[in-house]
Image (tube, rainbow, N blue to C red; front, side):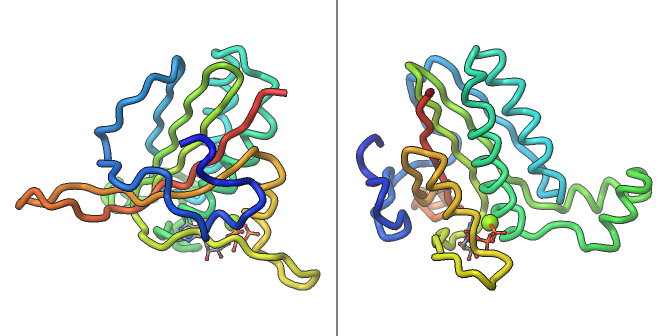
Length: 188
Ligand SMILES: Nc1ncnc2c1ncn2[C@@H]1O[C@H](COP(=O)(O)OP(=O)(O)OP(=O)(O)O)[C@@H](O)[C@H]1O
Ligand SMILES: [Mg+2]
């Protein structure tokens, strides 16, 4: 995947690095790998940050923690927003008393997936969500309150991009099943 997405071109305009990734069937040789599946809760980015902190400490890559947490927060927040999360009222009830929200209700939430790969001073962050739309980096202006996340991500990583993911249907035909947004970070 290296070198496919130039860091100065809008990532959304570039071809996806892997065209026929079948969800769950990837094989790779990164020496350190971590996969985390999260319910699309409003606090998913918080748990993702904590996970990144722990995993990078375990891999003795603490110098990447700050930047990695920022990138992961942006990717997970975007993913949770596009797949949908608890409504504001239910979220407030959950914060007050987690047991106030039934397991059935929580189980209906979509999932988002965080994957971390690390080796030779390079960290690859991947966030999967089930939405098929690509992320589109925007040029932030002074007035808008959002539209900055991916712009900021660009400043904190070597390169970022996205690729569609596929699953096979009953006839064995590949069918798009969402996408992965990825970023590479180099250890300082
Ligand atoms: N995972 C995603 N799936 C689909 N579209 C996405 C995804 N991530 C980003 N986008 C699209 O790209 C746009 C830009 O994302 P970006 O993170 O830069 O800004 P934002 O999320 O709108 O606002 P902010 O991050 O500043 O709160 C989003 O508005 C959305 O349309
Ligand atoms: Mg965002």
